[in-house]
Image (cartoon, rainbow, N blue to C red; front, side, top):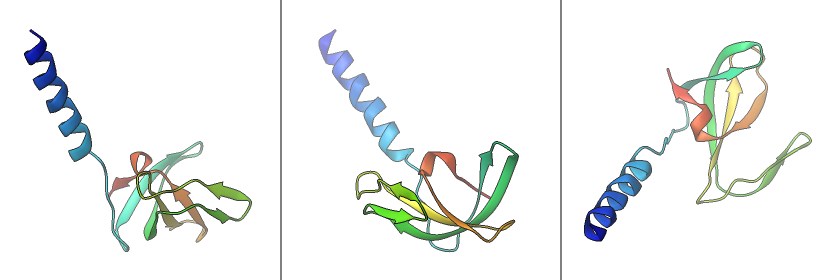
Length: 87
């Protein structure tokens, strides 16, 4: 039974890795806000910590975030990949 658990665990880990969302510069994306859904364009993949306005973004190569320009306001903000959806 231990062998089955190990194999199942490996399958789950593989699925999680392959399910990781990646985006490229220029991709059109949408995300949810407290006011509803909004959309914009990916400007850059962030892989190092940086400050955007007064917000410290804790991005890293293992935990990237995406700089996105809102189509509605023109403002840029960092978003985690799990919060974005390609449109």
